[in-house]
Length: 321
Image (tube, rainbow, N blue to C red; front, top):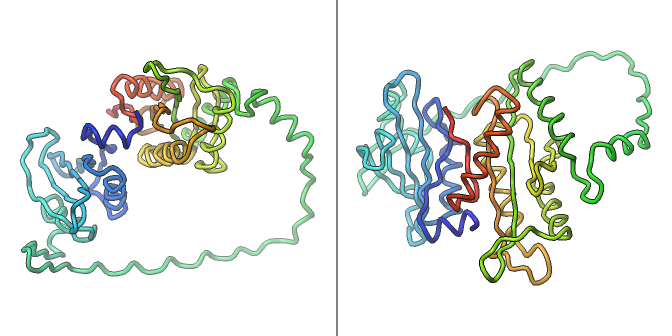
């Protein structure tokens, strides 16, 4: 069942990755965006700052009938029945951030004042950040003419790395790419994330069948269109696919997975193929958010995929430590 359908019918939660600091405006905007995409669902954003012994959870819902915007509720603790510190409806994430600061960050709370009375709202507008200094121009010597990049050699290498018939990177290439990203992380602390995906078609008797090659071609094209040029779509343990995301943490990977899902379900993948019969599941893991080992990265994303299938949740992050 697609993620947005399961939310509409079951009211399931979307749990974002736990932060190590108080959420910034970008985190709140992302949470509000996800709540808007999945009405009636509860988007949970947990965090625990190093200076605080308490884990806070911000729960966001967006009812279709609301004129004020999403409903934000701040809890002290991760349990469903944990104490409620405040609840507010607003589309102003600056206001919500100030309310959070008043409860969770005393140092920031001293610099702002919020009156949450329903008749008026007063918010201290943050000062605009100064524009970044222009990047200094380096003096370069006279450069030589560019070397010839032999396209025949490049295309021959691509044929070796990709599987004939689909044009996607082979499973062997996938392992090599993962090792390359792990080496990059060890050398320069650059994160990477992995999506392992599986797609099927629901038959009239409820059984799930593998998509035919023409549907797989269309799906792969849409996944690549929704991805960046540096992302790599690979075969992994047929019929699964793996999407390797360099320079990406797991929160960004979650957003990328949602873009991929939207792309696949926007229109039929083939003539007469109802999008409601497309079953799409994704498991997500990342380095260093989930682990510090390339083999564990693959295993964790694969386990998250299996959990997503067992729980009818189309997109699932591997539980972080």
